[in-house]
Length: 112
Length: 433
Image 1 (cartoon, rainbow over the protein chains, first blue to last red):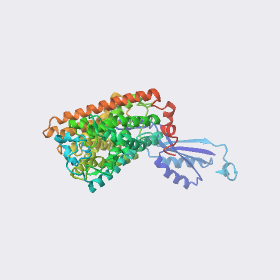
Image 2 (cartoon, helix red, strand yellow):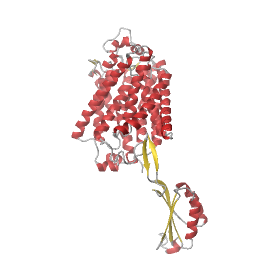
Image 3 (tube, rainbow over the protein chains, first blue to last red):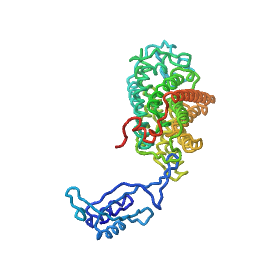
Image 4 (spheres, one colour):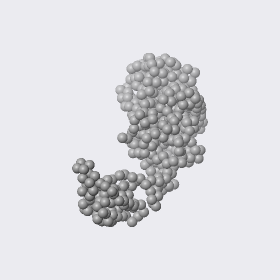
């Protein structure tokens, strides 16, 4: 099983959710995040004082899927999240050892 | 000075506007011109105006609290809001009589009205004395609340409450007496229709002194400290603008032509101030900001306050534009240049806007008084006298008071309390949960 974490532009969240639902991904976790990459931040002006905002608002989407499904999920997220401009985000993939569904006690892929 | 009261005299307030009649301002010089009569229209308008001015203090709370960081949202609201509670009491107990009691040597009002003794339903001008008292009281409330912008995000609440009570008693009340209560500045002919010196310059200068004494916020100006919710600030600006109709037009103390004029000059100056500020920003930085529109509107309102019932609408437009320009410079040029942390720009907007307004009133006055541009060259000098007197009284008393408070209970929260925010550290609650 793989955990796929995607840091994306907030307004792309709905597109990604729809795309993942079409792949029958059964669940996801969404977190409001802040950060920067190559895009860096931006500056804001308040009463003439310039503030540099280093951290931009982003959304972190986490899904855990089977190894077979993982490449498709990544592909779909990339398609949905891409705007071709800087700041589109990143995807991190990690191995997941175990999953437990709390209600039933099911383990592994059955719990996904 | 239009607000000057004529206790137990039947003389119409309008008459007092003319320099020749200023002599009559001394209470005790009662005229044998018959019984004062309460006018229903005037009374209704002043009661409404009192409520309008009351609403400005919560309006100011929103204006300020939107500009601070999240963790200081409630405490900034509370600093303004609580003034409605304590200064209202200060005013009925001692403040009103110090400001409007029978004149003692042009300096202070006597204690005849202490605890509102003798302040009742009888006519004062054309309105009941007791509502005149509360109308004036709302000005005292908002004036000290204005200062809270200077020390936002780092003041110890207990010290602030003591400061507010003592400051109102030692600065606001005497100054109010000097200008409106028959004191020496009104006798000299200084024009202040609704509080340019009494309210705005006094608050602005005290705020500057406060900012210097309490020191900068931790991390200022290196750290980013952006406003947390400018929607509150715009809401607050709207409430201030709305309430200002009572503040300025109510200061005519009658529902008459002068009140109507002040109503229009107020709106015109607010609009001009907002336009001026936004235009400068747009040209200088390429972006017209909401905070700029709000700041500019308040600057215009401050600028017109001393002249509201003395100038025409076109002069008001110029005064508003000037307010926007000068306050913008005060906030975005003077403050960074001098390096003080007047957090929400009380001096930049109320101090500088108030000084500009006081001078401009001396230049542009045409209604009920003559300014420098309209045949009375000396008026602007009298205005300067009022400004200097206000700066000295407010500056010196504030400085001494803060030094005493700092040496005894301390005026600033600890570093930890500042980091955690005043909402939690001073009030034990959070603005957002």
